[in-house]
Image (cartoon, rainbow, N blue to C red):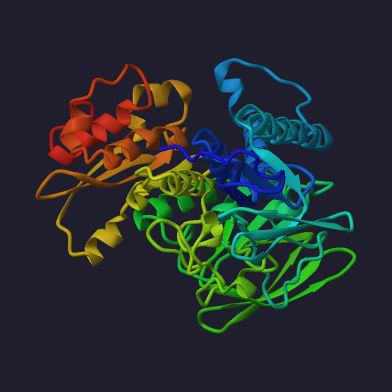
Length: 475
């Protein structure tokens, strides 16, 4: 049942106040407005959209796409019969294109707010009491009230001792998207998605990139077999990896950064770089919002603790996205925002956390959903696994993009798909079919018997499902 606002409510009185306009916050605000709630969305920055649209997902994907075009033109145009002379990088033009994309999308959020009746409020929000939020902007302060407050403040990059961000030589992901020139050498600390994506961008544009990672392999948490295949591909593109290695010290000077690294045997060595990108993860942005004063419970990592319906320890205060435990993914925050507001309205919103896709936007891309082979083993779940390489896919052959594999994991007793992992071209798109399969409780037999257009990349998904059943046709 939609929530109805009381007639004559004051301008500062709302049914819901959302703090943060990133993907979780702005989607939650729109859904709440659709459900009849008078909704305000408070954003501290000048533009809407949060980290994702302004300095994260969107600008990084714009740079990834531009650098992929340059790399492809260099390496593969000739084999397609396309001759190009004088190919070069125009970094300022690339940056301007990125900014145009960002501006269009952030302005688009404002348009969506207007369309749905969400009230945007610019300023720094602080919960002063349950149901009351103070907003400070340009030296002025005003107070908004609502029976429900939704905290969607997101996350910020983790800074390491000895590797403090200076925005020029030692940078976070935001600064790495604004470099004024292609560095001759870059050291990336952290082999997660952000490090590999931005490392790939600058490697394609001409930098020598070395990735230093504390764990034994890249993208920790992803399926180990697929992670190793990704590592092999990235090595082939020129990235260098130093696993089980930590940065002991770093000294930034006018010409670059001198690093001392220590491997698992305790041996020290030196690395030099023009720029060091620290990409060891992100932490919840939960300070300065008044959560502690309001009595909102946090865990040992500063994340807001929530119950089944995303309500915190304080009744009427809710939280979603990166600020709560779980995967720090924009689409997870979006789904939580929708589900949380639907619950507020008495509807049956839910999020299936086993059906949240995860993507590393390198090329080839690595996408996954559900459980890894290692997680199945820990759960002592008997499984059947089907794998098909893209070299067996006709469409991949026509594209010249045959690097990668589709891997599907099914419960050996029921044939129900419990995990899927794709390394290959457009894996971020292909994973959607298998995410739906897990969400709907489909078996590999269901996917295998679904007609797929020919010739297309999704045929590799069908073939991998057939491989689970032991009856591949084209492999």
